[in-house]
Image (spheres, rainbow, N blue to C red):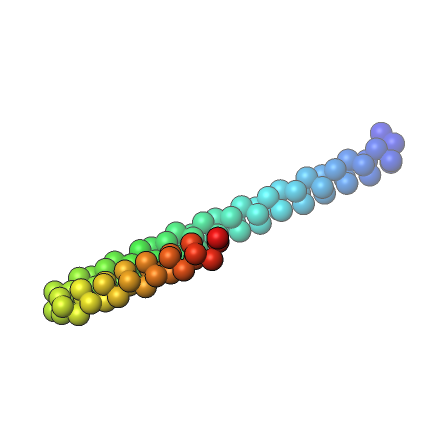
Length: 89
C-alpha cells in the first residue's frame, strides 16, 4: 500500500471516531433536555394542583368573597370585550 492511502485510512478513522464522540455528546444533551422538561412539567403540575386546592379551600371558607371576586372578574372581562369591540369600528 502506498503511504498516501494509509494516511487517508487514518484520517477516515479519526473522522469516524470524532463523529461517534459528537453523537454521544448530542445524545447526552438531548436526554438531559428531556429530563429537564419532564421535571418542569411535574413541578408545574404540582403548582397547579396546589393552586386549585388553595382556591377550593378559600371558596369553602369565604363563599361570599369568592362570589364577589368572580362577579368582579366577569364585569371586568365583559367591559374589556365591549371596549375592544367598540374600538374596531
